[in-house]
Amino acid sequence: MTTAGSRPVDSSIEELIRSMTQSARLADGRETPMLPFFFTQDIARTLSRKRMKHPRGRAVALVERTALSMGVWPERYLRNHEAYSLEEQLRLLGSSAVLMGLGGIGGQVLELLARAGVGRVSAADGDEFVPSNLNRQLYATRRSLGGYKAAAAAARMRLVNPAVDFEPVALHVTEPDMPRLLEGVDVCLDALGGQAERAALLRQAGRVELTVVTAAVCGRRGFVATAAAAASLMAGEALSILCGRGPALAGKMLAFDLSAMRFETVTL
Image (spheres, rainbow, N blue to C red):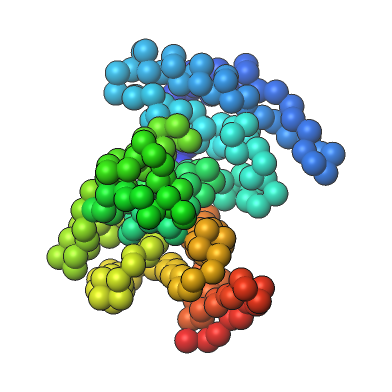
C-alpha cells in the first residue's frame, strides 16, 4: 500500500493504473509513463460505483494523485511536465487556495489554478453579472447575466476540472468573514476591487501568517489584455508557492504597463 499525498491508497487502484498506463513521448524526445484521460475517468467511475463515499470528482482526484505518486503522469497534466516535476504536480493536487473576487482578474486566476491542478479552491464574490462585465470577465456571458459570479464559477469548474474541490461563496466579503475563509489554506489570492477590503484582508492574513498574492489593474486601455496579464502573473506566483518553490515576489511588486510593454520590479 502506498500513499497519494498523505492519504492511504487501495492497492486495487494501483493495479488498475498499472494495467492502463501507456508510454508517452515528450517534446524533448524522452518517454514517460502516462495514464490516458479516459482511462482515468473509467477508474473513477468504478470507484464511484463501488464506494458511495467517493463522488465522481473526488474519485478522479484520488486516481490522479495515486498515479502521480506512482511516477505516472495523468494525461490531463502531461504538458505541465515542462513547468513542474512529478513531485510538484502531486503537491499542487494536494494544495488549497482561497480566492477573493471573481471579476476580471479573479475569474482568469481561477481558470488557471483549476487547469494547473490545484486540489482545493474556495472563491468568494457576492456580485451578480451585469452587461458591463462582458468586456473583460471570463465567466460573464449572455446566459450568466443577472446570476451570481460564484454560481457561474462553480458551473465552469464542473466543466473544466471537476476533480478540483471547489467551494463557491456568494458573499460580499467583509473583515469579520475573513478568518473563516482563510482557515486551513496554503495561499490567499487577492482579486478584490476595493482598497478598504484589501487592507482588511492583509491584516487578517498577517494574523495567521498566510501568504497573500495580490494584483490590481487601472487604466482605460486594453482592459481584457490587462486583466488577463495580471491574472497570469498572479496565478504563476501562487502556483510557485503551492508547489513548494516559494514566492518570487516576496517583499517586491511587479508593475507593468502594456501600452508601453514595460515591466518593472520594485522593492517594497
